[in-house]
Image 1 (cartoon, rainbow, N blue to C red):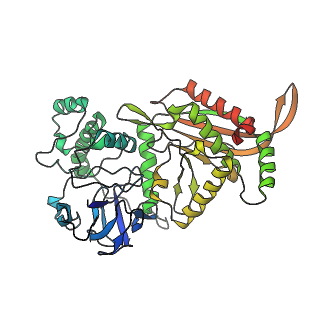
Image 2 (image 1 turned 90 degrees about the vertical axis):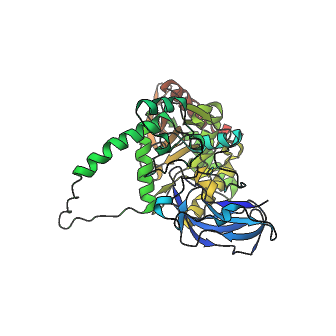
Length: 440
């Protein structure tokens, strides 16, 4: 059976990707799992793998060409196998603007999805569940959404349909951000607001003022622009609340020193590795913090994949350590080091960009005492970590100096409340202040 190679979604707000290079050429044999092409996203150039074996029969998108997420870019099939009809379909760049096809719902971000030529609307229940985890509420609307194809059912929630009738909105003109492209109430409201604002903006939009003499104007890189839009969208749509606690890291620092001496330089366990392990253990007891809020429902993720924030010259990324709760502290240290090295080289895998279910952001190495982070959609929580510093504290009625660290839990208030946030931090503090549990 022919396998379509699809432009994958490698980030919450990724709308398109560019084919940088075809590693395999038309006519080349392809084995499942082999790198087939390099694509450029907002954050990096990454390889995508073949999810079928055969021959690369068609490379439908040329090198250097950008196409929307979900667009078929190639066909893998047996050398004598008839190709599906999609092989003759023009890419959006080749088609006239007035006849551009409706956007295809984004493929799940953690994989280059294998599918046959069945229409995208014919999603199985399992596929819908996967999409529900990768298309959170509040995703930015694409500009000028194309109407639904004639004869194709418009997916919308009952509330969205009722609201559309009341507001005289044609649902075919609304871009859906729910599971499988389903239109939600918020999508209809966003469309109405956009429709109200567009005429007024066109009538009175003044020319931007010229910058004062000597003022530097910096054009945003694609990565910086993606980060700015994503974080602004998170603050607009996610009601954040924050819980802070001080953790005594004295015993943890002693354990870390002894562990690194025993490892003899093979790998070095960092403070952040211990925090990541502690978070993974705590998330297993508080699964709501390992979830996503999607279309008025909470989706609890089956796997705990803690993301670690990495600062690059171009911006910030947070690749995931998969199944963090099943890894030992040393395995987490090795995985963290590997992610940092490959992130700086720009060779992370697609699933590492998008698989995090909870992020840890640590500014302790910059001597920052405490700060609050912005939750990365579609996650529901994040932990911001300050520096470990000697501080005077009272123990058993005596003032002693201990190695203290401040952490702040940032939580989506739609998912849970402050009391649960306090319980989460109490458990995390217990784990880190009794660090032997990190070795279990």
